[in-house]
Image (tube, rainbow, N blue to C red; front, side, top):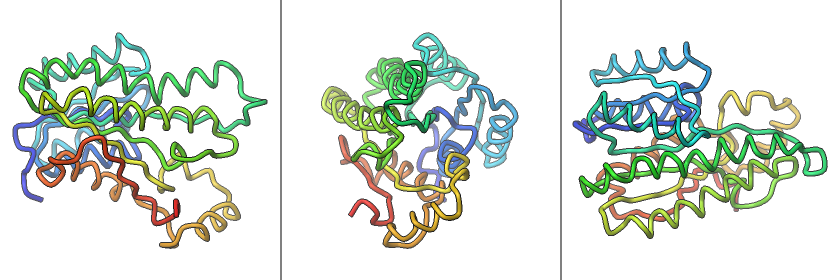
Amino acid sequence: MPAVFSGQVAVVTGGSRGIGRACVLALAAAGADVVVNYVNAAEAAESCRAEAAALGVRAIAVQADVGDAAQARRLIETAEAELGRVDILVNNAGIARAKTISRMSIEDWDDVLRTNLSSAFYCTQAAIPGMRARAHGRIVNIASMTGQHGYVGQASYTAAKAGMIALTKTTALELARYGITANVVCPGSVITDMSSVMSEEYRAGLLERIPLGRQATAEEIAASVVFLCGPGGAFYTGAELNPNGGQFM
């Protein structure tokens, strides 16, 4: 892959596995220096960092719970201190708590909103000054098709992802004047650790609802991120990309 991001630095939250890991490696393959953010998965983060570094770029792993404003700020400051700048921010950190509204605890609700939505706000806010000073930046939020419609048992997750879509549009409006774009990717079902707990019966029913007849790979979602951050995506801002295999139809 051409080194289209040579000299640029990308921060990926929740970058140690799944879609985040795929984004780290795709951006590194395209020449970006990368920051792998993680909370607890130190071994997975180091594996991802090493794989990215083997592609010939600078790569660091930074532990930070980005659902905490101070730690999110520290993540961005560490990236700027060690790698010099932040050009690309991929807000991917996310968790799920599969419970109906009547059974969901306040703690579960708060944890999901904090990790999935507040983290995107905190990291974006921290990255803006540097991007604005350089009159260039690419922010990509990883939401979900479920943020575009409801889903039984996922009130907190769908609310957070819908919030990310709205946050993206406001970010795009506020920052366009500074040469900073903000876009959101809304995947359908993706083969990740989070989806691996599906029963075979549920998976079979799911595939029947996807016109292309399969789940996406994490690498396919990462390709959308690379596009939005690269030259081909330069005129996209406030956009929703929907790699869902036609399921939302």
